[in-house]
Image 1 (tube, rainbow over the protein chains, first blue to last red):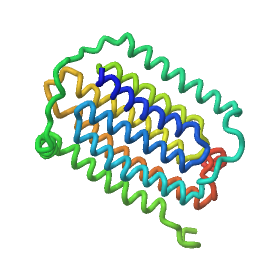
Image 2 (cartoon, rainbow over the protein chains, first blue to last red; image 1 turned 135 degrees about the vertical axis):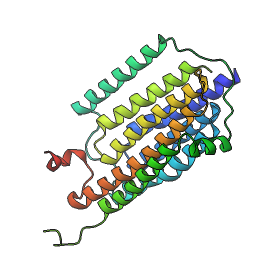
Image 3 (cartoon, chains in turn blue, purple; image 1 turned 60 degrees about the horizontal axis):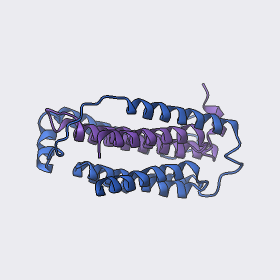
Image 4 (tube, helix red, strand yellow; image 1 turned 180 degrees about the vertical axis):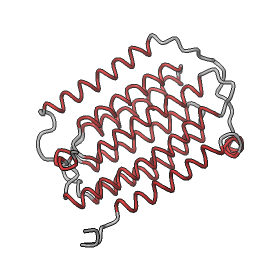
Length: 169
Length: 102
């Protein structure tokens, strides 16, 4: 009973943040409601027993990605309300019809999907075990993610770096 | 709670992310929609890790961790591209990005 209540609160928080990000006009408000969604997802991970992933979600998404989004919004001076009426354009309506159709199909498929569930408790995974798995069987993906993050760091800096006038032509 | 409840939340979050990516005109908000879809996939991974029958207890969790790392890289490059485009065109409105057509 109390489990269901906690789950409903967390799920409602997550989905309400996403709905607010979809509907609000001010971009900074959208970024803040996105942060609420990320926090709700971190709570869902914690309620599933995945402590390490939950705190990684807090560190990476709330700590880094949300800040990055706010910086990008402020750097592109998008903090004001959007011009024009969002609701009446036909592209808006078609986009939401497609999204609602996809969501309806997914939920309807899930209602009839016979997943094999184990009723056992959450698998106990300590941080030490995660570290040993990352250094053991998962060492190659870890190295590739390291290379990917380095490439993304250098690439993002080079892409966003101001071009010097008249040098490339 | 059971597996299906978490999967339904993930499906709804995916649909909302898809709606944001399809309807918002600001490039940053389209990236936000893509992030929401990636997060919905992560929630699926963790829900199956928790409730599925798993002989190997590490794999599902590490999939989610690697997915978070890749999503962070994607966000940084995407926002860098938006800032670079804004420097050229002085806008982050996708409707004004017709010069990017091939």
